[in-house]
Structures are given as structure tokens and as C-alpha cells.
Amino acid sequence: MTMPSDNPSVTDIARMIDHSLLHPTLTPAQLQEGYALAAKYGCATVCVQPMSVVAAKAALEGSETEVCAVAGFPQGANCLETKVMEAERSIGEGATEIDVVINAGLTLGGHWDIIQREVEVMNATCVRDNAILKVIFENDFLQDEHIIKLCEICTTAEVAFVKTSTGYGMVKQPDGSYGYQGATHEHLKLMRERSGPNVQIKAAGGVRTLDDTLAVRALGVTRIGATATATIVQDAVDRGMPGPIPAGLSAGTEAAQDGDTPGY
Image (cartoon, rainbow, N blue to C red; front, top):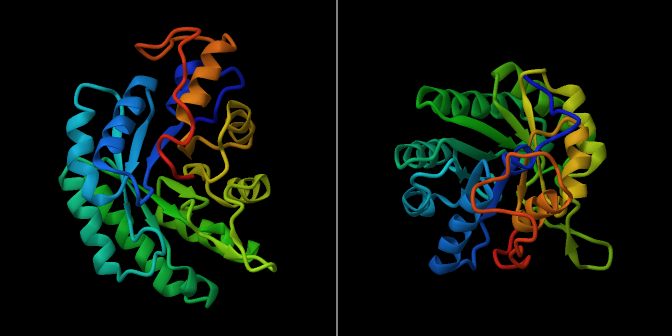
């Protein structure tokens, strides 16, 4: 695996981004706006629910942006057969990447044989159909020992990516409210240290600015899940980061307002 350079181009930054279009309230019109935005800014993928794969694929035709679909999202409690079915259907409809949520209860319970089989079967399904797998841990629910074990399992299974969070793994706080930390630097460092060199790291949850992106990139992250795509990439353009610049962008282009596509 090639580690990120210290002097990334605007395109390098854009190609780190899976533009998240996962919020359950997104309308078809908002999803179409999201596809157009991701293509304009040159994202690696749009990350969508399985029912949106066909529309996303059609909207992105002719662009460099691919379709990533989720499986077992967001709780990871689906049967393995259901996750496999979701992955197979999404890949058949045009997705080239699958982000699957691991079962947190089984992880916390130490049922590593079941977790290992799920990772192996999901990865084999994706590899067979020329797609890549990202395994979502939901770190907010876990302790370091669980994260380390998951990294070891994913390394042995030769998955493409391990990923921090769904963006929806809310934890009840002492005051009764719910919140999550998402991709913390401590967890990203741990995941990079305990994953094999061929396993890449995806940070999701809380990466909302160019400075956030550069900070996690310096930790070895090669992909992020984000909704603040316009802000991140346009800031890279406006700061004069090296080209090439994604087609349709130039210094001074007005970025879309954050919040147009709610999510991470």
C-alpha cells in the first residue's frame, strides 16, 4: 500500500472522499444533488443505501466517481445471509465498493469465530465480484482490545479497508442525551498500527474540514466519509494546493453550504 504524500494535490484530497448520502431523510431530489456534487468535486465514491445504487450509477455515468453501497447498515445486526444478499445485489447494480457494519454485540461478547466468518465471507463475496470491502467497526461502542482484534481479523482476511464508524452509532451519555465521537485520532493511530500494511484506513464521523482531512491523512488514513465535501475540496483549491483541479472547479468557486446532505 502506498502511504499518502506530504504534499497532496487538490485531486488527492478529493479522491480521499466517499461523499456520504446515507441519511434516512434524504429525498430523491437531494440524492441527485449529492451525486452531482460528488462528480463535480471528483470524489472517490458516493456512499449510498442499497436502494439508491441504480440511480447513483446512472447519475455518475461518465464521471470518475464510483458507487459505494452499505450493507447491514447502520446497526450491523442483520444475518450474514442478508448482508451477503445486499452486497451481491448492490454490486450487480453497479457498486464497486461495499461498506459493511460488523455486529457490535457479538464483538463485545467475544464471539470472534462468528465475526471472523462474517468478515471472510463478505470479503470473498466482494472480491469474487471485483468489488472491495470496507469493514465498519463502530468504535464508539468498543474498547481498544476489541478494535485490535478486529484489525487482526481483517488483516488475516485481507480486506481492503477498516473503517471507524457509521456516523450513526449514538451512545447514551450520563445526562441522558445521545452522541458519538466518530473518528478519533487515538483510534485511527491504533487501527493503523494494528492493521497489516495492505489494509487501508477509512475515517468516518467528524472529518468536516480540510484541516481535519490533512490531520487524519498524516495518521495514514487514505479515505474519509464526509458530507462537507464542497467545503473540504474548495478550501484545498482556495489555499493554492497543487493541481490538477477537478474539472469544473477553479479558485473562488462558491462551495455548497454544509448541511445540504445531512449525515456524518
